[in-house]
Structure formats: structure tokens, C-alpha cells
Image (cartoon, rainbow, N blue to C red):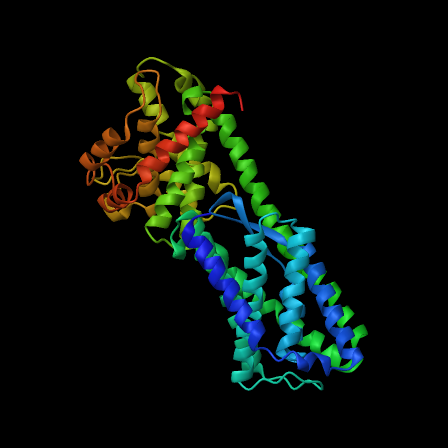
Length: 438
């Protein structure tokens, strides 16, 4: 981990320490035994929820964040008991999760996760009080205050985690934050929609004490199951697509891994362009599937041919874009933007491409990105008729073709972002793995 990330972890830890020092811990000692038991049960429920957490990849498959319903018991603590109870609940939950569930070895990770949780709960509870909320039984709910509590909690948590990921990976904060909150802010919305369960738990505690709180276990399980099923279905679909693409590319060893590299490069460029997370997903998916039409047997011999293609073979191979779009149209799971991205990925910016001769901004943005990524990967890869070009040669070539073959705005993004170096490194890494038989 780099120096900036370490300093950030120290800052967050110090902030949590300041919160602890300024808290009035005597409020806990004055609570009756039944309330202390209630706090203990809420901590146990929070730990149970963390044990059922779903992991979401961020930046690459080696990095992931937990998403769970462990926040619900913490929010219940905040609206029923004093601030100090919520702080203790969040700290104990995180320590248990890091040590016994995640089995984290790095002390800094445990320190950060515990500290950011304490800070998030403290800020959220402070917002709750400032908006007129009160921590008391019998429950007197202030809807505006509760909305402030939940919104502050989620934003603080997601912003703090995004900053750390961005610092560790030298990535753009906005890109990381969009991944953390999910498409259209779905992870925040998911939390806000689930948060009324915390109010329900507080109401049950008000009426039935500890026995009432235990009744929220079933909603936690149901919501977790629904969310996990969606995540697993999305991942299964993507894995299936990758296997299908790899099957197509086994016909030609020189293009092995091409579509997957193009999709990664397309996502990187889309992120550097500042596209929305939904648009990034569309571009990445279309890039992964851009050669799906070649699965048709009519292309098999042409793809494997080592000599110069005849005019008729050129005509046939140029139909793969339309063939791919037609194939995807028969699958209801793909949005129209992905299908159009596949159909038009050989359109040129000057209108001399195929299949429809679109020009300029008439070409879908996904297709414009794929056209450039497809060419970059081809130029950086070895071919039967030539060795791979250098990064400098590729940069000169795409600069020369900007405005004719490629969108000049996308070319500018690639040239200023170090994208070519990352693409070349990706190909070198895959070649090294092939050599050792991985």
C-alpha cells in the first residue's frame, strides 16, 4: 500500500479515536440490564448479517467490498439507545467480522474498517439528532431525521471506502465511487429501501423487547437471498459469455483472449471518458460480444486461413457484425444499446465502414470505443504476418487515423491516459502465462 493510502488510514483511525474520546460512556452504565441485553442481541444480529455478506468486485477481480445488512441493527441502536451504544455495536461487529469472519491479517485493514464504521455511525447519529430525532423508548419516529440518519451513514461509508480504493490503486475517485454505489446508485437505494426494517425492529423492541428484535432475522435472510441471487445470476451470465467467446477464439490461436482484452480496454477507456456506470457496463458487454457472430460455421475456414483472403471471403467475413447483432436480438437479456454496439463496431468515423455506413456521432458510442480497442489490441498482438507493434508505433497510427477511422475525441482520451501502456502490459502478462502453461 502506498504512502497516501497509509496516511488516509491513519487519519480515519485518528478520527474514530477522537469520536471515542468525546463520547460520554457513562450513558451506557446507567442503562438497565434489559437494555444492555438488547444492545447485545443487536450486535449479534449485526455479526450474523456480516457472516451472510455479499462481495462486489471493485477495480479488478482481486479487490472486493462487502455489502451486507449488518447496518440494520446498527441503525436500530442509533434510534433506540444513546450514541455510545451505536458506536460500541459498530466497533464490536467490525472487529469480530475482520478477525473471525474475514480473517484479515493486515492490521491496517482491521483498523480502517473498524474506524470508518465508527465514524459513519457517529456522523449519521449526529445528523439524526440535528434533524430532531431522539434516541428513546417508547419510540417516537421523526421521518426526516431517520432519512438523514440513513443517508449520512451510507454516504459516509461509501465515500470513505472509495477514497481508500482510489488511493491504493491510483485510480480516479469518481470511477471507484460509481462502482461502489452500483448502477444508478442501486447500492444506496437498496440500503435506503431496506432501512425501514431498522424502524420496525425498534418498534418491536419497544413493544416486545428482545424477543421482538429477533423477529427481523427472517426479513434479513429474505433480502440477502434476493440480492445474492441477482449478483450470482449476473456473474453466471458473464462467465457463460466468456466461455462462449473463448470457444470461438480457439479456432485461431492468434486471437485467443482478444475479446476479453478488448472488453477490459473498452471499460478502461469508458471510465476515463467519464461515462455513467450503466454506459460503462453497456460498452464493456458489447466489446466482449463484438465478434459473437463468428460462432456461425460459415466463418470457420476463413478465420483459420493463413493466406490472403479472396474478395468473396472478405465479403463473407464482413457479415459477422450483422450476424452477431441478429443472434443477440434473439436473446431477450441484452439491451438494444449492446446489440447496436455489436452491429456497428466496424463503422468508421468518416462513414466508410460497414454494415450501414454511419459516420461521426451517428455511430453508437459503444461501437466507436470498440472500433478503437479492436484495432489497438490487434496492433499490439503478434500476427502470422508481422510481430506486435510497439506502443509508440500504435500511438502514431491511431493519431494518424483520428477523424477518419477513429473518433478523435476517444483517441485523445487514450493518448493522454496511458491506456496503450496498460493494454500492452495486459497482452505481455497473458503471453507470459501461456509460456508457463497456466
